[in-house]
Length: 459
Ligand SMILES: Cc1cc2nc3c(=O)[nH]c(=O)nc-3n(C[C@H](O)[C@H](O)[C@H](O)COP(=O)(O)OP(=O)(O)OC[C@H]3O[C@@H](n4cnc5c(N)ncnc54)[C@H](O)[C@@H]3O)c2cc1C
Image (cartoon, rainbow, N blue to C red; front, side):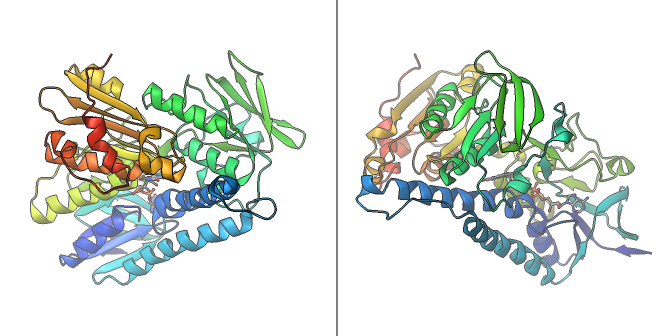
């Protein structure tokens, strides 16, 4: 038994639902298939739950600083993890429900729950049913990577998915992985009141960022009492009575860290292994990412891949932008391309890191004449008033074209302010546009003209 649609969408992540709505509104019959929770990673186990938890941790942290701000807290400030979790569930649950209700309410759209597998380039099976369409869109996302560390299956551990459901305070959380997800959870749990140790295989935290960013964040986290072990090689897990341990070869420090709980935060793996891609002939790379062209078409005509599964982004905004590219190309003949977008993202530690464009090392490699400026957040009036002066603002521009090449804002509001620079980058205007603008006082953004007046060749 088979059903025919104009389009099939597999997965309800950050691209699928919006595409379903757009195609259905254009008069196409659409089937959208979800095997687990509507809204995917961002809504259920990624951005929304973690940023909700980060907000609880920030409030707890500020409450502990009461004396500095001139207020009194009677008694200890302690996180009530059941209530922290309940707040998270309420906010994340609302989004999850919202996506499902939206999809079920769409005219021309059929929602199917179950695991989808390709049977051919134009057909997909869900349970015992075959669905056919000439256009198929894959939005299956990814999951936490579980590496083959020795004894990994003998020791209980959390991943981001199970960690967001925790409703108690781990006494000592050992986090394996000192990158974006590990740092957000690490600071959050330290602020809730856990002891936290972060074990990182590389020589520094968030190794994809510039060294000064890694170093500043290391200091911020260590100041809050987080222990950090770098250069951890040959990691293995072990049971130690009631405790769990992470063993490692490290130049410094003991060869083992014991704690009460372990969180693995060592990267993401695309959900492409159980999709029957071989039956459709869709090519993947050596890491399992679906190979796509600049307009997100796979190796098979009529099949597109959007979001984390195509390896071209890894963020909610990149997945959503994938949807826009696919929809505009299909429905508006707009010729939008992935290569037109500028890399941008944030790390939601406190202070956050807002990034756009190239890092210093990428700029160095591209061989352009560069001007750069870096000033500490302690110079920013708004940061001083808020009592949040950690971090810095760094901007690099092309000395010849005057276009902005990249920026890192590690500081209060950095996730928002960096987008002022990003938008100017999209216009390809010279940095002098920002330098001459009059901004609102007092804000972090008002400091951008000042920093841009200090540009110099790098030392
Ligand atoms: C802890 C954490 C924090 C994050 N924080 C941020 C952040 O602050 N900002 C940001 O931009 N990004 C963040 N991300 C990344 C972000 O969550 C993802 O990039 C985003 O969700 C995009 O995912 P997607 O659209 O590719 O698919 P997903 O959201 O992963 O959804 C894929 C969906 O497909 C379904 N599916 C998979 N296979 C099948 C199948 N065979 N049949 C049917 N259904 C299937 C899955 O059940 C899932 O619902 C974070 C990620 C994590 C893990």
